[in-house]
Image 1 (tube, rainbow, N blue to C red):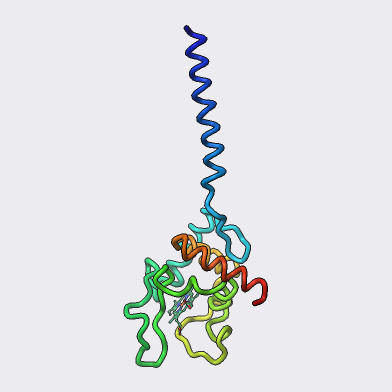
Image 2: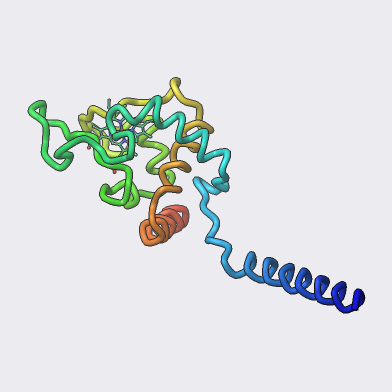
Length: 158
Ligand code: HEC
């Protein structure tokens, strides 16, 4: 009797271990990266804090952007767009998002006048990468996949 119970317990544990192993292999989400750096939980936490301190005042605490963000302001400039899936941040490659944040929009579109600040000298490259990691981690799969595609095309130089 005792042997039977032991055998049953070992059997169940063994089956569970196999299920965990197989599940882990099949369900692993596609790895999220920023400029090739893997986005892990620590980076997301750090990025969320830095986002709240440096970006949320314009881009919104929940990445929702400024109200009526598609309409030009009286000064002729554009309001801050959302960084969630409602905006167009996910239409840009990693390198472009990094350059816009570090060096401003004019670094990507020469002569462009914008209220988006330049973060060079305020945030380190690693901090900017962490913020982008946090933003990207909030996107649904469709936007993530689309942006990954744009990023890999950008890396090929097209
Ligand atoms: C003072 C307000 C302000 C702050 C703070 C700010 N932004 Fe912006 N940001 C803007 C505005 C305004 C635009 C739109 C610029 C335009 O089109 O003229 C913008 C645009 C952008 C874009 C381009 C988005 C796109 O969809 O094309 C990125 C990326 C961006 N910001 C990232 C950041 C990050 C990251 C932070 C924090 C480190 C930040 N911004 C902080 C105002 C701000």
